Image (tube, rainbow over all chains, first blue to last red; front, side, top):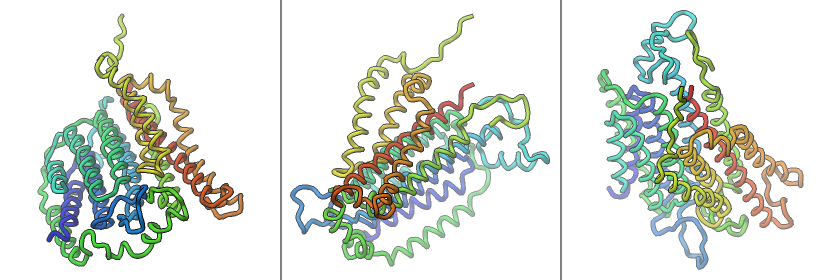
Length: 133
Length: 175
Length: 147
């Protein structure tokens, strides 16, 4: 059990994030769920890179040939992934702001309802336009 | 420590006040940064704390100021998403039986290029920080692409939000 | 008719004094993290994010107009591209000196020094781009709610 405890917690976090993306209608909540999912994937990779008895992969003075280091390769991959994650979040939030300005709401069912009612030229119905944020 | 993360994530699920959810998401990032420190990933912990607990929270709060901070209660039944999620969790836990034990030095991930990076990096590249030498030299191409992704995201956000919002009397919002 | 000045956090003396003491060390720390990325944890990404966090803190306390006078949006947009072009430029420089794209060994008289200079240059490019991107995205979000 303890050999895989980290991984089971990671899977539980992944599924929580997935549930938030799928089952919640609010767009900002979906993006928060996406962030939870991404961070759990980072945990999975870093857990795989850890070596029991190892240390951080930085060579300090006094290190000799017997020092055991944790694997630096997953660290590099996750560094890239974190920055890509924040780029995706920024773009997603910009889209949410524009959706709010166009539809007046960020709840998924209201947006679908407005899309179902929309006139032929494709722009959302003006019923909720109030000009305010 | 890592169970605290699970508690935080589950409470994120139940919160309907988005401001509290964003603050809790920042806390979640900070907790995962400390878990990364525990797992010897100091560079990753630094980046996760700065990016996740810093910039992400600021962006979420900026969005909340523009869109409003309450989430509506969900009226649909959630059985299908719950069933799919539990099924996926079961499959993943079953598959994890094949994974090597946590921290095993003989795991396959430590066998191919990683020993070469660890041994050769002080001789071939120089910096004491092996993560920097792998990131910037051995895998420099990937870092080039990653900087390109950040650039593209900036272009996208500026295209969406960069122009001043015009107040129109009817019809489509100005872009 | 009196024009009401937009309220800002500058009037709160605790916030203003605390931030005036904190923002310069934050910016210096960002530079420290940038240049010491090869001796300890750090590097371009972390440094860029910390620098942007310092500028965002200034904007939160002193208002967006003052921040945009100090760090103009046009300059930020220029630096978004400049950092990435610096990275690509280091790669092309390697090609011009006879090696492959992004070959650092040919950049100096000795491969190890070439690696050192190459890593410093590309981390600088990455740091500039990341800092500018975060500041530009913050300007975009913060400037959206205004009439």
